[in-house]
Image 1 (cartoon, one colour):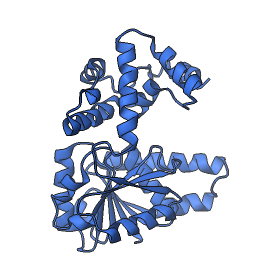
Image 2 (spheres, rainbow, N blue to C red):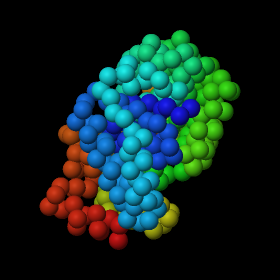
Image 3 (cartoon, rainbow, N blue to C red):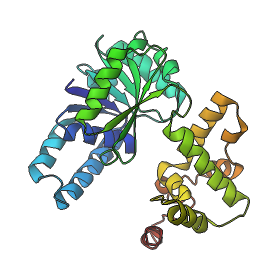
Image 4 (tube, one colour):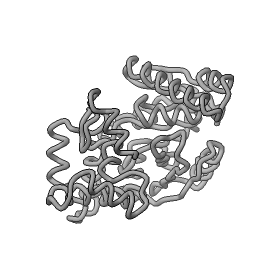
Length: 295
């Protein structure tokens, strides 16, 4: 289990690749865009530099981590020798099903196929393959190199052997694996997303402003980050997608996304990645806003 392919070089993908590489796994980082791969490696390098500055790792360990990562734009080349694949593509069911159909075709017969999905059914994803017993959820938290939790989600047909292997790999990454059953949102997002949605509803109903809502949750509930700020960092489009999956899965109105969240996503206000969400992250105000939020 030393060759690990990671699909997607975005925020989660590059964090997962960084973490595996840091613990001396050989990582094949795959994305359809060379520009995305270059950006992902730049992010990993920047994060490693930060760790060196904090004396968490040495310069030699940084260089070895980077040497452990090879990039690919062709899926079939990147997964040819993989013992484990971790898919971290966009949270879109049609895209994930296509990726897993392709993985089933291109990967060796004994390759375990894991998905970092934050809400989509593992059983449904596994059904797109001829190896549903070897398909599993491996849901990392952001930022991956720092956060300890990995939700390990067993689909209906996931074997105990597959679970045990992924559990042991998670421990080798210095993570804490938690076994979760396959229901929409799993544990983390089934609890987190309704809280974020309720915070948006509170703003929508003019109970309080953005900073006031976040301050109440930070100072009153000892949360390190307010729910609206956290939504900005997750991505409002991702929050909306997860809520829609849970609403479709449970048919319960409590998971229905707030109209304000829907409108913000349609308007392109997605949070940090778009430069504006509940807070303004534009170049002119970024330093001021970030300093204020963390004060």
